[in-house]
Length: 176
Length: 180
Image 1 (cartoon, rainbow over the protein chains, first blue to last red):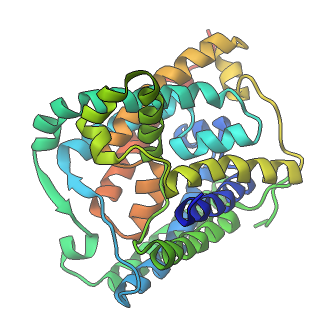
Image 2: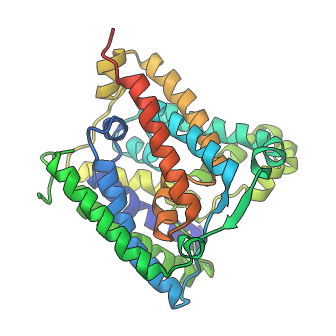
């Protein structure tokens, strides 16, 4: 294996370890979040975002790393996001957690994984058609919230933190 | 707030915050060692896996497919990251004895009964729909939900709202009613 593959593997082991320790790999937790009864996965995900955001935006400010926004292609993000949401509810896993669920013995995740590989193959066949239709509607390109709103990221980050922390307190109060 | 859950897991806030640190360490490490900043993600790997499998039966078709060419079908950093997730979850679940061989998830069984075939069909169908969606939106809850949100990407904010909004709607229809 080359350096990239080794680095990916090691990072992935830590990633999978934390996903499992946070107990977010379970079908029941994912469906629980979508039924608005158990917010474990949102607590986990948003905690990661709060911490990661500060470091990543700071490192990008210092020009140590580069940001890599995914394009704001309107049709693609709206339609793709909706399809993903529907499929996510049916299978009860997202791509990353399906593999982790397999690791902790929930072997039924294998059906979701096979479905996703087949879905990826379908997408490869559909791509030329989608490129000339949905993907061609309107693309704002790689866009960050600070540029879109015309304000500094260091104004957005504290607002983001305050909002998410308030949400966390609400989750705890409601025992979600 | 407790730092440990009743079954030996960690508080989601603690595990999540540590994942945030891992995300920072990971962008630094990829920039340093691979010369290009890479962000945590998972769904592109499914395209590469599909391409690798298809190569064994129709190599020419994969070469001529525009999307496979664009994605580059090979075992890269993210591919091994995804393999690592399986390993990491296995290690963690063995350590705290939460590893269980499970054929049908408890909540699913409550609603639809113990049939493995029924669970398999819907997980498979859901997987197809979700992956077409993830590739179209150019990310999943890892790429958009974690990495994109950390960068304050507009597309990720919109994608996350769509993922969760439609997920809530569909889950309500599928699991919301009592078993009849």
